[in-house]
Image (cartoon, rainbow, N blue to C red; front, side):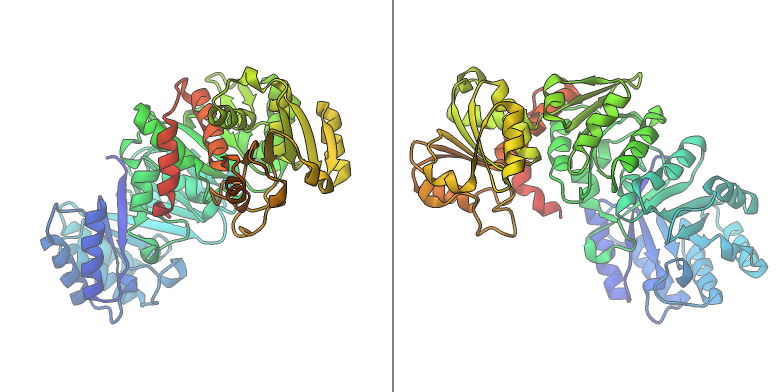
Length: 522
């Protein structure tokens, strides 16, 4: 059986359950899970009534899982074991396809016998024996999986734990890879999100999704829409090749939406994931080591963002991989490719994104950048990549920065001029670039360059892309200058990454439209 997208019905009464059933079916649920522990004034009769509603509701019939979770294992209302077993046995008689009961509670002879008798009276129903750890990973998940099978061989084991770091997820991946048959294994929490998304690739029997954020029943649970529209659930299979953005934070990165819609448009079996890698170089290295040790996971490439761009370059260097000369010069990589033989390659497409945004807006080629007078405000990572790219193209650059020592060091390294921020009043460059975060949401009333410095013969480029039109760009337009927004750079660097990932040029207009509609999924 392939992985089923399961939507919980987490209602406190019959009427609310009825509404949620309708919404779940409309959203595209493949299995419904009735969470009876959410119901107030719970009785077996109430559960039978809701099951009848599910069986008789309009549209395609869906398999039904009934759970009445013990409070210590994540239940909402602390109903006694006897009532919970009454509810589950009544659910089986009413036609439930699956019931979920806690592994630890199944050791009770009374619980076990009552559930076994009810199962024997149902021709197709199956038992899920579940274990949850809401604090950390299991001490030995392999041993726990084996014990569940020993206790009741016909049971479907469900092993779910909180990942405190993405590196905790590999226990779950390894168990899915090394076992067969029906089993449900994934991780909770923001660090465990990736395990929910690739559950279908690894053939976990179920993965769970809510209709909306209000009806989520566990930390890190995605909505059905996010699974299907953002993460290509319907087209994912065991052969899907994986990509992702490594960073911290990554929860609201635009990259998964942009790359996945372009993968779909290109009709390639690839999936792009958010990969929350917290910590520094040690944690990054451990994550990459874990990935490379598991070729069967199918990871082929990564985008890399804050704070790991230098870690990425160092890692590829230590593994004797290929490093693009300009990435070496910049001292940071935002893209890693992993070949079938484990050979790595590092690139930096930040500069390409910036240069493409500039040349496309101005209607020129990169060769035309030679000799162009450019002012770059800032001396951080973004400034470094842009300065490296522009000096490589032959532009004449002056760097302006608040911290003189940092700005002068960058200027000396790339053979540029340097000036303190106070000299912006004498600005006369043809291209002016803000490479700082000034003006980024929520500080949208700030600007790094006084409006009286802006002239109509300039082109003003702001690398901030939230908001798309910053105060700097508004004031540049009022002065009659040409403008380039940060979204153009983001799309440019993503397009360059997409070509590295696929060998194909993406539809950049599709990327831009996707970014514009991205908030609808969150």
